[in-house]
Length: 103
Image 1 (cartoon, helix red, strand yellow):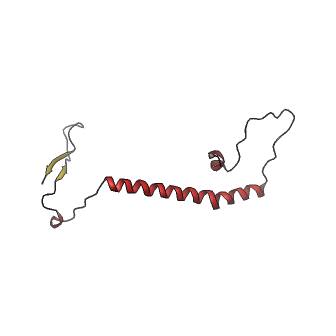
Image 2: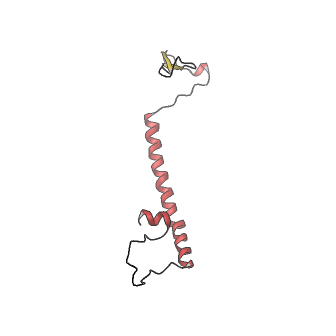
Image 3: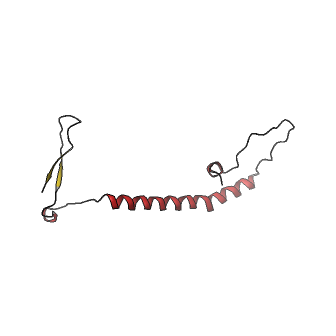
């Protein structure tokens, strides 16, 4: 299927010569309902499945590259761990955001 037919649930109307009153046959109500059912049952679930797979791949790549460290109490701080402190006030927007590292 073309992207246009997936987006608008109909075929593309290509430029044609209609001088001899050779108009294309319009889709009936039953045909439209069948097309909508087809889109709901096959196309939309396929798009959802593909999007979910892509998001999982991106999440794995992000999690592999970026690790989050959550520190809740002083007892959970590891000895020798280097940390940075976020500065609440800066002299200007070009000043550093973090101060450190501290161990």
